[in-house]
Image (cartoon, rainbow over all chains, first blue to last red; front, side, top):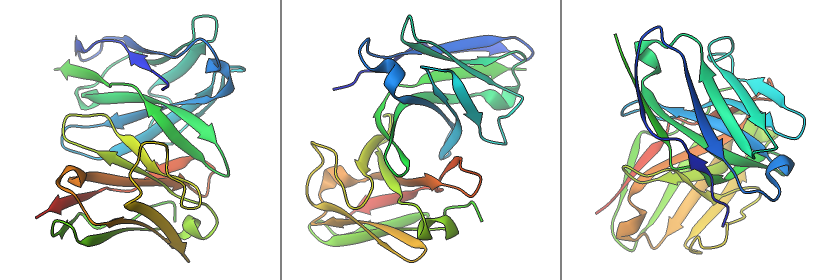
Length: 120
Length: 107
């Protein structure tokens, strides 16, 4: 069983910066993609972007491009999701997941989620 | 279109069969994967590729594809199957998108 462990919940104010993390298993971390998914309160899943930790190849979904930064450190087997200036609308649960490439990417293991609360 | 369309909710009697559908133009070219999410929990993968189930997922779950529609079928639905189900696939820009989700009620 692959275990992705995410950092704890955060309470921030609008305009502040934030970096949350997702730690993966030591073996094979750099052989899979890591995907970040947003779930706003009472809403569905949204694909934010994906990173391949081995070479940091990163791709963002258009709604998130320019507002978040996805990064990874393969030496610590940790992926990150970062905001420079939070908005109240960033309040959500953020999940990381391991992406396995077949003909398409499927997400076979998920972190427990990080709840981010942003106040105005 | 890069959107995946799902019915918001369906219901099924205990032990009966329910089909959850996902429509999108790119499903003619790419397989969908399916995720189950129970309230307060992280999603889990229940189906991927051409009708492939991860280990630990009961065989009452099956998948199929026809034209622009991917389907997840639960044959003999159980109370523990009550959850949101999301499809996911590649879109025309080679990124990925989730469907809007279907809540399954087991009566």
